[in-house]
Length: 183
Image (cartoon, rainbow, N blue to C red; front, side, top):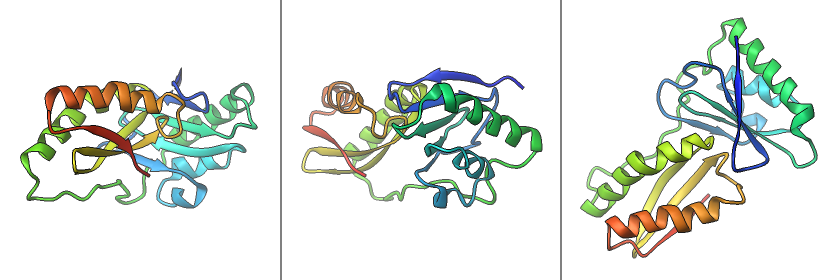
C-alpha cells in the first residue's frame, strides 16, 4: 500500500491519501481522542503523540498536530498508523457516525442558492486543502460557516472566507453582505 501525503495551507495539518475511499459519504471532524470512539482509524491516529485532530474526507485523512511536535518526527508514525489500520481490515467507522447538519425543509430561496454555491464551488476547493466547510445559517445578510479539518485554525482561513467565499457569494447573491466563521 502506498500512501501519498500533501501539505495543506495550515502548517499544523498534513493530508494523507491512502489511494481509495475513506468516507463513502459525508465527512467527519474529530477534534480529540474522546471523539474518536466510533472510528478505529481515528483512535489509532490519536495514539500518536502530538495528534490533536483527525478529519476524514471522501478520499483523504487530514491530521493536525500540536505546535510542539514537527512533521519530520510525526509523519512516519502517522503513516504507520494508517498503514496498520488499512492492512488490519478494520472499518474506518463503526456503525453510522457520519456528521450531519440539520436541514430546514422550508429554506428560503437565498439559503438554497448559498448552499448550492458552497456545495458546487467552495467545498471541492476546500477539500483539496484537506478540509471542509459547512453552512450553518443566514441572518441579516450574514452567512455563517463552520470550517473543519485543515481549514480550522489555518492562518489563511480568514482570507479564504473574506476574499474567496465572501466575494463569490456576494457576486452571485446580492443579499449576502458578509461571511463569518462559527465554531
